[in-house]
Amino acid sequence: MNKQVIGSHIIEIEQTASTNTYTANLLRSEQQEEGTVIIAYNQTAGRGQDQNKWESEPFQNLTFSIILYPIFLDPGDQFQLSKAISLGIIDFLKSILPKHYEAIKIKWPNDIYVGDKKICGILIQNSITGSRLSDSIIGIGLNVNQSLFKSNAPNPISIKNLTDKETNLKDCLASLCNSLNYRYMQLASHQNKVIEENYIDSLYRFGEWRNYKINENTLIAKINGTSEYGQLLLEDKNGNDYTCNIKEVAYII
Image (tube, rainbow, N blue to C red):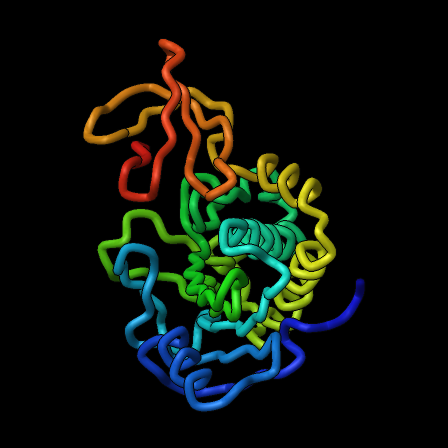
């Protein structure tokens, strides 16, 4: 399947608080074409997981939302969409940052890292009608040309930090949409095994013994993968298994 869905229609807005909020309001007023991208060149109150804020200098980064209608997915399989979107971003970054190829990883559940630094965040908001996903709003914040980060975020990095070069934002968006579209088409054609294998290959800290805080206890554990519902699967050195939701585990650097 080579159909171009993501990025087939682009709505540019100069400024908004959050592209996900803007997109949700847009969908409430009128049905939009699938794959529509709403990009804001100045996002003043971007959001991440768990009400975290996303810092973005105006006109320096990509902050956008995508409208999708993944009606082929059961609600219980919605983490598959997160995997596909994450892999699309990974594919794009590996193509433009070849020197950092091996360091580009997915930090569960939905951050993209280069080494131990965060370059991209994803916020997915799904709506369910009956037994199917009716629509999804995919919010993406990618650090592109911002050099300095002033918030208290512990570990941001940008493409410019890694290359010492400015990147054309429109060209960047077009390439990223192509990569995301490729993975979305894989998902739509039920290539779940490929997506799962590629996701595990790209998972930050997979199989490494590292420090974590799990349910308030600090311990050494390794990541073994994710459950079908998107929970993180860990194992400690005593052979105890842990199935963690987002607020139940913290990475210790």
